[in-house]
Length: 408
Image 1 (cartoon, one colour):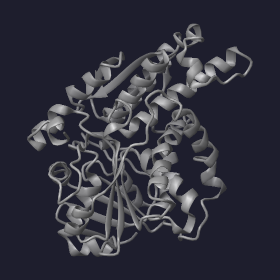
Image 2 (spheres, helix red, strand yellow):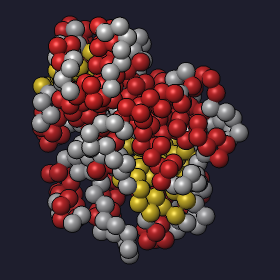
Image 3 (tube, rainbow, N blue to C red):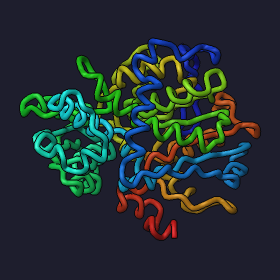
Image 4 (cartoon, helix red, strand yellow):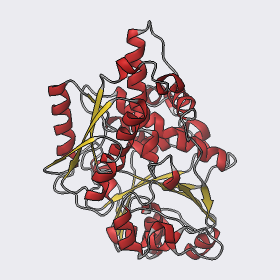
């Protein structure tokens, strides 16, 4: 185990299991997240109505303020109508399930999105029901995918999910039920109800006997990473900071960049809320461990206490650093984005979308953390804005303005 470097509201653990830059992605990792899997997701999702790549902002003013060479921000606030990268994952897994159900009845034919949307297979699709547990954004994606492609949907939210996020899921036609306890307990409840009613769980976390669907979710997320590679003109940044709940999103980004850039891939930094840092604790232990309790954090989408095993198989070797961050930095990041520096654009980012900026601000106040992460004037840092104002009421309360008043 390596030394933990601490600052005010931040801690960094250099990953003792990180592989050398020259190490290949390899066959074992390819059996989880593969180039062909990302290819298939990209082919399907880019055919969906309303698909457009989201913006990659270059924040020169903020970079100068922080003492960085360059700072890039991938802005997922305009992803379809969901304001979150999650639209790429859960909905894609729902579509894949529908494809497979149709193929079973039609001699292996895997229909295109256009064929499914036409209603040609309504008799098959309408008999399917999908379900999951969610902190908010994943459930919205599953519900949106179910509504878009025509199947039933039941979503479970835990005690700490805001009513605004629950209502946003219900707006896509899903039945939403609240479960006592934390996120991990709601995951188990969703699995039990699916078994009881004959539904299909669409989760972004794996567990014993359940792998294929979460892997579809992770391949769907890869569309965003491939967009970034193109937007960066195929020039890798020196650092990428990725927020993590169960680790599925982080592992997807890590896999795409590793596959594409190989030994030139950026330093990969994972950041979690200090009250729900299951990956940090797993890295400290050298194997997956669970974090228990209420997992209370304002970074609602990251309030997860158990690592996804397949995500761990990617991140255990692919992540260079694991970090914990105090909530107040995420909230401060929302305000900083809404009040841009110089000619930087104003950005609407929710509580989980600001974790990368939050880590940079925390590191700026702690020379030991800054040095441990090798930030500086030569660093070209990429941070991922995973969501916009997915709970408009919370956003307005934190920032002091509605999103429409920030970006006009």
